Length: 150
Image 1 (cartoon, helix red, strand yellow):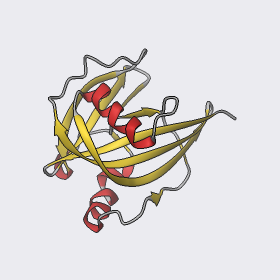
Image 2: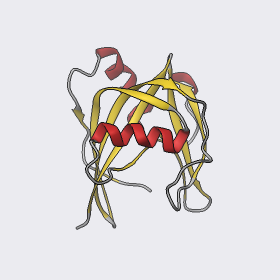
Image 3: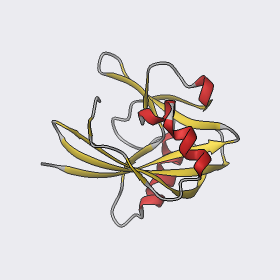
Image 4: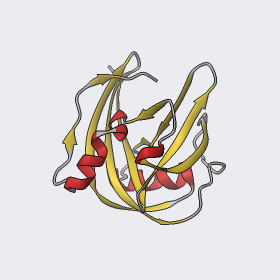
C-alpha cells in the first residue's frame, strides 16, 4: 500500500478561516484548508506554510499542530498533519500555484456561520473545530481513520 505524508493549514484572520475550492467538474468539488505533500527534507510546519502561499497567495505563521488526520482510499493511505496558523500578509491569489494538475478555482476567508455550501474538509470545520479552537489545542487531536471521498 502506498503512503503519503501531507501538511495542511487552518489559517485564521480575525474570526475567519482560509479555505480553497478544489473543483474538477464531474469528479470533485470541495473546500479545504490549503495543504499538500511534504517535499524532501521539509519540516511539516514549513510544508503547511508553503502550501498556504502556493494555493492561496497568503503568508501565515504557525501556532501549533491541531489535528493528525488519516485517510485511506484505493490509491493508498495518507496521514495529514493540520496546523493552526495566523494570517500574516498577502492577498488571496489562486493563479500562481506551481503544482501541476492542481484544481483550485477560488479561495476565501469564511466565518463559522458562513462556510461555503457543499463538502468542507476536514469535516470538523463545520462543528468541532470551533470548540477545539476555544480550548486552545493543548495537544494535537488524532482524528479517526476514515475513507477518503475524493
